[in-house]
Each structure stands twice: as C-alpha cells, then as structure tokens.
Length: 282
Image 1 (spheres, helix red, strand yellow):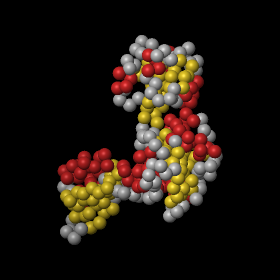
Image 2 (cartoon, rainbow, N blue to C red):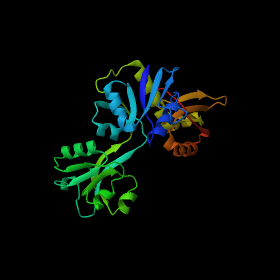
Image 3 (cartoon, one colour):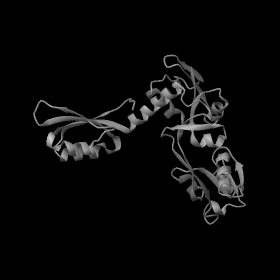
Image 4 (cartoon, rainbow, N blue to C red):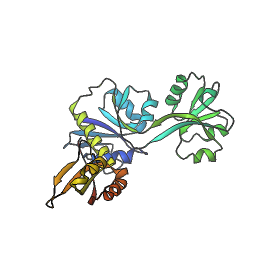
C-alpha cells in the first residue's frame, strides 16, 4: 500500500485535499483525522505538519508527500521534488529599511531574521555573503524595529505588511515556491503505484488548464480553424449531414478559450461550445 504524507493545515492543506479528491482519492472528513486508508486505491494518507513532511519522506517511512518547495529546501532533508502542483505559490525576498542595503551583495556583516533559516543560509552561502541568520517563528517584520536584525527574509505577496512596517524589498527574489510532490532521494522512481499517483495528479493539472472545444465549420475554412485549435496531437474532425460542413473537437487552453471562440466565429465557425474537463490521461 502506498503511504502518502499530506499537509494537515495551512495554505497547503485545502488545495492539496481538493486536488487529491479530483484525482479520485478518498480524503478525511474531519480535521482531527490524522490517518485514513483508501482501500479502493491501495493508498494510506497521513496528515502531518507541512514542515515535517519532507523529513518523514526522507526517512523512508512514507513513500511520497505533498509539501511546499520552500519547506523542502528549508528542511535540508534528503528528499527531492518530483512534480510541481501549481498552487500555494509564493516568492521570497530580502527586505530592510530604505538606505540600509540595495541587494544581497550589501549584506556582509549584517544579521538577517527569517522563519526559513535553511533557505536563507544556503542563499547567502551561494553568493559568498558572510552574514548571521536568526531564526524566528511567525511574522518577522518587527525584527528590525526591535533591533534583532538589520534585514529580514520572508514571503512577499502584496508587500502591504512590509510597507506598514516601513520596509522595502531589496534585490532579486531568493526563490519562488509552490506546492510539490516529494520523494526520498534514491527511491525507485519507476514504482508502479507512485507512477499511477503522479499520472492522476498530472491529469488534474491538465484538466484544470484546458477545456474541450466543439464547433461546426465549413470545409473550405477547416485549415484556418485547425490552426486556431491544433489540440494536443490534432483535433478530431467528423463530417456533418450537411455537405461541406464538419464538426471539430479539440482541447484548448482555458485562458485563451474566449479569444479562440471569437476568432473561430470570425472565420465562419458556428455552434461553438466549451466544456470543462474533469479528468484526463495524456
């Protein structure tokens, strides 16, 4: 039975459970449940603190897990990313009071406060910077005001919290994170149950990204229509009862669907429909 670690709380928990449900896996009904078994799919789920998941997976006690790329790197665990999942995206930056520093090259001799000591220490070392790193749990914006550090390193979304604290972002991003599937370094990458799990999640990712588009088109405009909707391999084209017309079906990127519908209409296509894709295998 495949043993999988899932975040039990925080910004990773809800989207991870939703994706697993869309992939056909049973999920817990109450937040107090720490372990459930999905016998139909031969999977056992363990609901753990997101920060601990990479460590459990690296130990070999669990086969794979879902956590954040930031938490994976920060843990220093012998686990590796095998599939990005596209949710819980975040960007890490240094920030300080205006005039203190302009970028990472200016941080020599300074103290940096962060909740992600592993990430920051590694980033400073990669750039040859000799700076101290202070670990703080939770919000770190007040560290500078209280004299704990001259610089902070944290997730930056809108930047509102930094501005409210009188701070400004400096330099390039330290890293960009999102939810990822992880496994132990050196684990068998071809294990059938793991591959099946990954295919299901990839199917969800594609289903969320594409829609199915159907339309009727005159044969003399088919090449133009196909250029607009090439599909993944090629579209399905079927003759209609009315001579000179065909029905076309193709997957198109959801973000472009409205524009493609307009372009198809302009070349004479009619009965243009889009439908959601709930699951797929490519």
